[in-house]
Length: 343
Image 1 (spheres, rainbow, N blue to C red):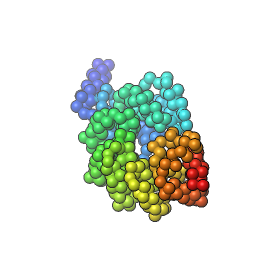
Image 2 (image 1 turned 30 degrees about the vertical axis):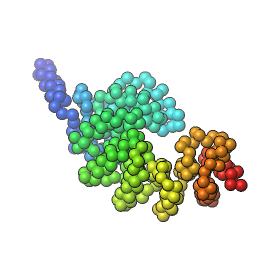
Image 3 (image 1 turned 90 degrees about the vertical axis):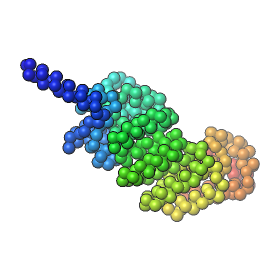
Image 4 (image 1 turned 120 degrees about the vertical axis):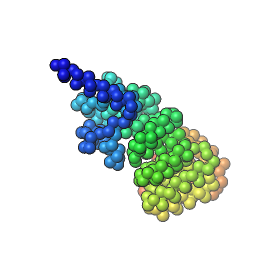
């Protein structure tokens, strides 16, 4: 019995010693089933280093325990609720008082998807053991809340311990996009290139989004620079990419918008409902669609615009109808108003 107690005490002392000197726990050569299931549960596509490499523990209060079956079920329920329109994830999470990274990260992700950023932040503050998916979701949440210093702190920890891969880099650029931090987005892409981490379409699109959300007078040039780098890397932009670029061009001369449409055609990218709506608002100088909910208000605004802009908008809508693109309600209102003004 004494020998067993002595062995237990030695084991505890070793864990405490490790916790006080290291922020990183190395996993065995073969990944535990917990980390494999956790990654699969969130549908994350991460390189091997992120899947298998490390668990980052910023609080060092002990080792992570295998989640219970109830916690695994709860994490799945949170994921489902987060993916639903008006998903009631908070009701699913309400009775949970544990500290499983699997559950807390799932709850944070559900909060992120549902736009409940403050609630997600409260859950983040409860996190003891930070896994790589937790870091990624946390940076995205903090970016939505404009907590730039906290984003940089988490990113710095990952960089310091050489734990950055596609997943974590994507989270950092996403945070930069929310804040409108062009420089940070560019720095992350440069870091990825220096480390041999392959950037994908999502990384570059998020970087262009940083330009769209920035007040920098050179944001259009920066967005074009990101697009050029994307094309140089052999990646093809999609509708979301061009939608972000479109928003970055809002203060540019209107001919740039027409050039954008030509470029999209050249890359066989077809506008969708959201892009059409955004294009019309940008071309016709409406900052938000909330301004245009009544046809008479739209008509009054259109009468103040150059005739060439109205013609361009009408031609664009006709082309979208011909190619069977579904028009949003606001786009149909603009179409009707244009017909009234142009006759």
